[in-house]
Image (cartoon, rainbow, N blue to C red):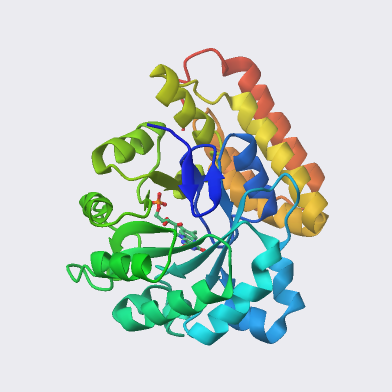
Length: 334
Ligand SMILES: Cc1cc2nc3c(=O)[nH]c(=O)nc-3n(C[C@H](O)[C@H](O)[C@H](O)COP(=O)(O)O)c2cc1C
């Protein structure tokens, strides 16, 4: 089920990619997920208004490195002219351009961007046309099923995107009104796949390697985007590949969790300095510290960590647990 995926001129080694996640998919997190096997990663969504008005300052959000390839850049905005200008500005920074048409948060939809665009299919056509004319990068859009539950515009939008020159489309099959509640309706993915010739990527409720293969199998979609399932869990990319090849996958050990925290911290320090690194890694420890005895205490302690030293002491505590429990069934895991 895992196979190379062609999006315009870009050929990915396989079809399991890291989704864009605001506040999460910065350079350190992308590098970690790539080391575990993600075939493509996206920047956090970048404001077109910021790019067009503040230029260089916003371009700093696109910081990358040679190991951080191939890179998808995600833009959000609502004006075709501005999106086209932004597309020209970012062309040298990545290998693919995606336009966010799914973000449900008030701050974004209040400006007419994100999932608010699903209320205006004609505007979507104008945006894709303008951006297509502005860049040679492979172009994709990422959408939800519609604004309200039941007003499923995804097929209409899919046809528009294809006709205007999009190279692929990602669907997160929830309405905007559901935000992140309820269950993603994967049947929409199967419908989208049946309706279009361009590749369709699926997003929504991919929390385990089994979920990933099930989505590919049940919907026939061409690729999948892992989002919340990668939080504190970059290993999911390695595990999906293992599962596809050998019908089982190796669980993550507690030692690997401690090592990942240290590695992630060091990547943050290199990128943003110590103060920001400590603040950022605390959030991630909340996700990494799961599935072993004493995990909830580690999460609590992380909240009050002040320095790199404090974080390293926590990883030592996790290693001590690991020495006692790795290779033993994690019976009192939290
Ligand atoms: C914290 C958070 C930030 C997100 N940021 C973005 C974003 O910047 N751009 C985007 O297209 N989707 C964003 N999403 C949506 C995800 O990419 C994904 O489509 C959604 O979470 C459904 O997948 P999941 O159920 O597997 O998490 C975000 C989701 C979360 C939870």
